[in-house]
Image (tube, rainbow, N blue to C red; front, side, top):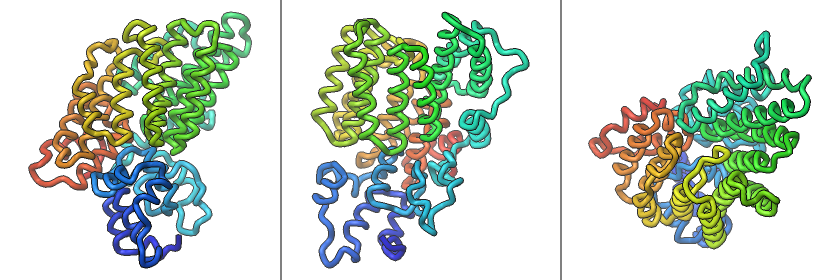
Length: 440
């Protein structure tokens, strides 16, 4: 498309409103297509959704899920410099109007400045250390027992939505790398395991804050150490994080394939009935179900949810094996996510109202908050649903204060609510936005 295509008045208005549905409609009805607009049915088929779903996207509230924004912006070939979020690759960097390479790889441009990640400097320092191995280990490496205790505490802190521990992880990685140089036998395996989990935690955080590059690279490093460890369950967790990173980078097809291949490997493993293997396989199937829903593969999504539910039944209750939070309640939470991704908003709200998150293990604070973030996104897509969306965002913040501030999707949603807020409709929204680092 030429530069003039994007300078059309209806397109300029849609881009200014940061409303992907309006952008699609402006794209379909653009005069450059000729006297007849491109039909909703044709565009819907091209994007892998139904005509009814596209109609709701065009006329409903703004899309707020970053991975879907990325996927559809790429499909429409929207120039990156016109977007209010960053495409995760530099496919368009040859364009004279595209941002520079450094801008494209700045994770904090995953949104316009209004939704810029509030801990920008700290995050940049951490990712620079991790991605470029720019860390100085301690004069004396931590003992291996201290490394293992620190990694365990980091996993607990992450699930409690307490991200202050992250600054210590480069030191943990440096210490462990020093320790394994002269290690063998059981100590060497312990070092491999500590390194794998260190990078897995960093990958989880990268995905949460919308830094797809950090999430993917650290997941790949975790997979490498898991292969050295020769532990299929840890490899499965690394595959799960790789799939999450791919989704954040707008690649749901690849994410789905990675999750399914890893789940199948666990299903045929001699220890497949062990709680570790059941839990990781179940988590992978749940991720694959959400990816199928985003690709509008309704039957596949349902089949994977049902398969995961059978594994949860075999597990015997809500557990947190391998830090997966897998169990019957987590399956129910993903049924909500799938319904939301399919545009079944009424079903999603009904499912959300019936989920009892108190059944989750007490450590899973972040997961209990996430259900409210999911319901907030659903309500934001419903007519007159913004007040309910705000209530769920505030409840999510009450449960886990850092869960809003550090969540890219939540910040995008807050920005969208601010954009269309009417005086008196959503009291408390501005204060929430300020706490989350989203400017009015």
